Length: 265
Image (cartoon, rainbow, N blue to C red; front, side):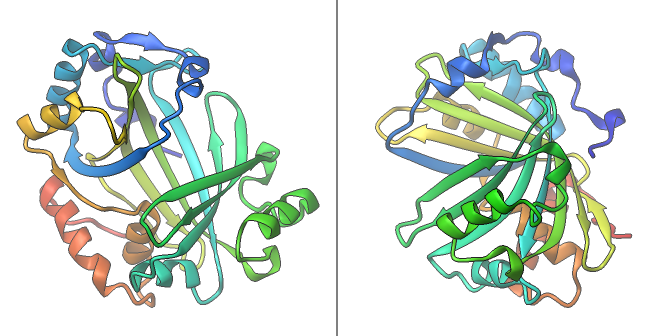
């Protein structure tokens, strides 16, 4: 789980009007374009001030404006899903369980990327107790078989990611921004753990037909686009046996952003 002592200060979010989960779920971005950015917490403070001034609203879930997330990624013994991403295979998948800690909900989630670069996510609810391993749940295993190229018996719990998320929505409800802080990883194959310090991963989920004030805000603060997969970065950092040359440049970019070497223990 994320370190409670390192939560990005909640006071930074006081200037935002709230938006409920029900309101967020009512928004359908039919022609969605997703763009990821990399920054640090000091820069994020300025981004948030400008976003509040521009009328962005913040998601409030379980009474909190900052939501803890906990995920377990599954892969084959040979790390096929990691390798497909590393080898730039256009059609690829990721399988994970995810806990939305504030709401107490947990899901088995399947992310599929097609050869046009679009990502679709399917998910089914599971008991919170199955977050570490869903494979004894017959219904979840059938769901996996129906919606992915994998079967439960092919997969192992590989890696845990935990982080804190802030979610913003613009006044027109045509874009969402997720802001992930306090990113921590634990590799079940190697036993190694690490964190990304004060690195921040921002994802803009935008209706492709609409203008984005957030893009201008990020540009003003010199926040640059960075295609970063949490799972792939985590494996690169915590599994020395994984073939990960293509992701090492991303690790160096993160280290430059947070101005320190990432340590692994």
